[in-house]
Length: 324
Ligand SMILES: C[S@@+](CC[C@H](N)C(=O)[O-])C[C@H]1O[C@@H](n2cnc3c(N)ncnc32)[C@H](O)[C@@H]1O
Image 1 (cartoon, protein in one colour):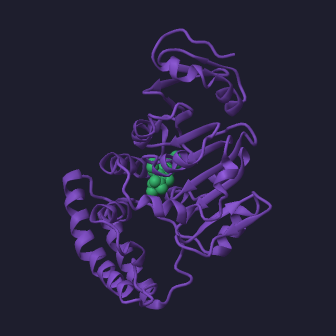
Image 2 (cartoon, rainbow, N blue to C red; image 1 turned 60 degrees about the vertical axis):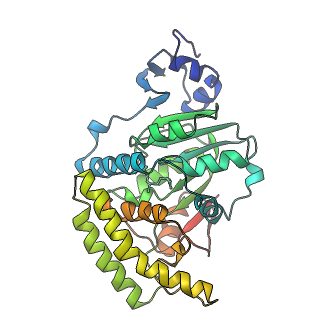
Image 3 (cartoon, rainbow, N blue to C red; image 1 turned 120 degrees about the vertical axis):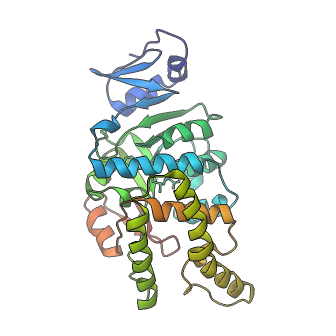
């Protein structure tokens, strides 16, 4: 049973009592600054349920999480390009079929895809989960929506009720988990009837030049990801945007204008994007300490153990896939 004993955060979760109990499969009691789930009590900060303590994380995971907290605090607002990108990610999804459903955004970051989804579909409930302080940015960005449960948690330790979610999405998250995707993918699969995932591809459909360029960029990332100073990160994100991204983006843009196929040009996806949108991804790409890459076969190997059907989209961004 859910009870309220004070004003403030308790009021926020008062109307989500049934949803919380269904998600956790246990009785839930909400107080002003804490929530008791079964026999476990967690704090609530700005309507975010703090399920996993970051202090208990291993150093490499902590470094990843810290970096993302900083990234999404710097890039906290939605860009016009996100609308098109949303449709690219969700090309396999019948959005209208999500009407009235319970969904989750695993590794939500600042909540950009959920913002867009919620403008298109009226969900029963959305569960937004992130282990970094980005969850507070998401909380702020999604303030207009009353039916969201915000959880700060590690996807490697979550344990929600089996099939509690009709649909979940986890876009650009699992490939940043130092120990690999398997544990988090299993936890997500156990609670999600359907799941949309995006994992970085391993350039299997690209030539030698493309792969060599990527290896070079990755060598730079290994060094830049160790930089702690935020001022230096911001400065370098501008340098990298101008000197590493723009030459390719401009060529790809020109080819597009001339009606030529630009898909062999690295970073062609950014042709026509704004400077700040590109800088956001440059920051993401060069300051994230862990980045794993996946072939279609590896994705099938991992996710066919968890779902009976895995459909990998042929479209960019590679690889995003739907598990059912
Ligand atoms: C590249 S961002 C993507 C954010 C969001 N999905 C988007 O596309 O805008 C990766 C996010 O995954 C989160 N993340 C990474 N490892 C995680 C973990 N073990 N548990 C929960 N969240 C994690 C990070 O904090 C970060 O916000």
